[in-house]
Image (tube, rainbow, N blue to C red; front, side):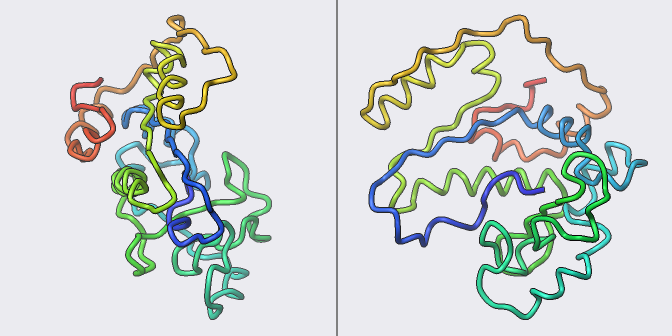
Length: 218
């Protein structure tokens, strides 16, 4: 499951003006529990959470046969401009998967390691760590002037006024919309305590601290 464009962008020559990019994060506990509930590996219904967070983050049946038509092609031949080695499944909607039900089950997208190996991340937790470092590294791109990290929990407890202020500061442009108020009525998701303990022990907290999260968040 591709959460965002991962490799693409730095080499683009068509962008003439600098821009500000932002990314909203959930805490790693909610992020992982939501991923379990949505079952991006929806064809496997018997996975327990421990299995889910430890298996390689890839399409377990392997590439669908129709993907092999792209195997010897060069350049970004897969959807979203990915190289063949860097994306499973290469096609946005492989015909073999059309009848799979569940969240995005008919169009799975799994990004491989960002090292050219074509190998999958060892788990969803390793993928999250890599995503964090990748996003923060965008600030070094020549056409990016600033990177803003927004925590979902802050939007819920504080509303959007702080976000609009940050965007105004970063862009020099006054917001044309009204801020949304906090939503204190939102109920916090209950979590299995075995799940919480496992994640506390296995999440990369050094990476999480870069986006404002600590081990004792939950």
